[in-house]
Length: 456
Image (cartoon, rainbow, N blue to C red; front, side, top):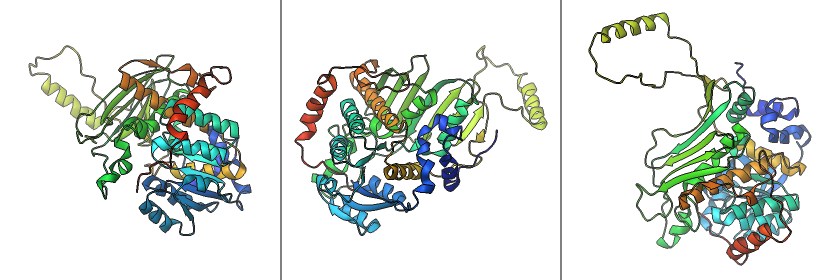
């Protein structure tokens, strides 16, 4: 198969020719780059809300884009602000995000605060007329995710989420290959993310424990599902062009018994209407297998994180190796082994081929932020970006519910959008969605003070 190089500059140039690439069929949001030649002299003014470790990571990419200008920073933890000012020394600083949103010299915001604070900040940002980029998971509950999506639609402001795989050339090419039938019909998608570490950060004083290590506590986080699964579950719906409608799962604390409240060992199975399955597994006391998404077709397999694909039927071994194998077989066949009556189906050696012709470098974060900048300049929401972000979070949260309840759960109809195989449930004004917004979200956020923020 033809190897295609997607260097950043070359990729932008190719993606800019909207409608001329087959890749747009599987990744239509890339049309956001169709006017890059006409926006060279434009600038978008950005406010970073939560410039902790993740926020500053995103800042590094934004500072490389001449069309982006970071004009404001907001955090309640001074050390994070001080570190961010080293990157953007001319930026204004705020300790209340509402003051930043009131700044008329800011066009768009990047929200990189703890999970339980995303919704309130995003809703206020939309109301203030700002475009919104929100890190994943976008909401703490499915009600919050829907409220954020609906506010985006109601205000007409951009809504991007931190799903960088949507802009990773390896994944984009992999999805194009799937649509072309290269690996046949997709039967399953296996995803996993293994680490070996306690996920803790040092704290300068005990009073800052929950603020700094917010990911470990249930009032702020849902642990491995919202922090890691959100990245990978999206690959299943992207590959199969369908949303799974059933999930079951298990979670436990099996190793890090250190006072944390979220699980360190989780597993979920999602099932599509046509029977295919999507699985997610994470353990943070063993890192041997690392992370990967394995897209299994009847003709081959794609592992986009490694940037490789493999065909089911591989070429036979060279003549010399076959000769050695024959000698070994003849030798050992003379020995009387007592064993099973079946041949063990162990994996064959298959080195595969690189999707882009070489070992991958980096991920899609740079292109994702470039896309946000381009969209903020033109004011046009790229197709399917908001929906992909919504469902990545909604599936994550539904999986967490299945783990907590120990039940097989169906995707609730009131949280379905008009997207892929889903259709939005029609409700009377003032009923389901409004009640949930004014109830769960309102009680939790509307009267709250500025949310807690993790330091860098």
